[in-house]
Image (cartoon, rainbow, N blue to C red; front, side, top):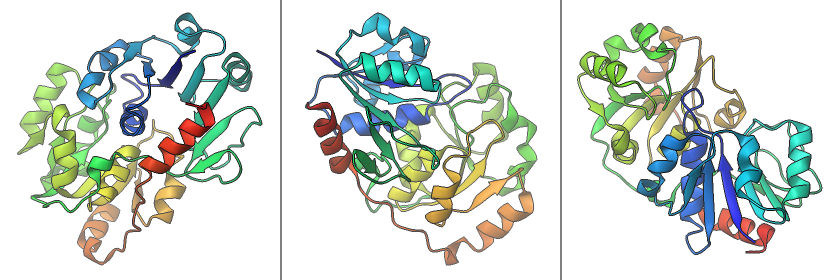
Length: 288
């Protein structure tokens, strides 16, 4: 009987779920868990994130091709419809689902990790790697992280949103090489994909469309600003509002300038260090 952890990733999806998985798996290093990703490229570099076993499976429907009936699964994706989810709950002997939807409901045949829901069989928390919690010197005033994906090159299309702010740029994993080279020319300085952790710890103000980056920045003592991409889910907006993280929509430049000018007066809520809580919940739920 084996344990798997599936995350939806890709050049139109980004890596937020993968980064969350890395944080959770780092708290479960004493367990034998294989990470399944929906693209092969990120699976090939998963070891750089401390993940020993990873396999790219292309699409969610391929999970049964590598697993067996009675295995255990942690599932982090919005791809599955209700029927597919019910089939998974029957196929696996234990099933943990991660959901960011405040309107979601827990099935009797699953365990749930959620920033919104509470109750029996639910772990109410968000996942952030322990390494981001600490007191770090903020040597970079402002960094712009559009996300790990930008297939439509929207960052370039909306460059005027941040141009005169002169931020550092955090490069994403799925950027095309020629696009990446062009972006480097537009910014005075940048962080490579591999320097994400350094960026999070050293950046004072992080302007980002990545929900996980917002959480990581909060843990590291930064002052994140979340802007809602049109192609990204809105599920984290209520949670960010609860944490007093400013949220920007429609590339509202005037709103951004006001937020930056007054950010020293903003009282962010403190994020909890939940790694032990999540690890205990998963071990208990999956009987590991």
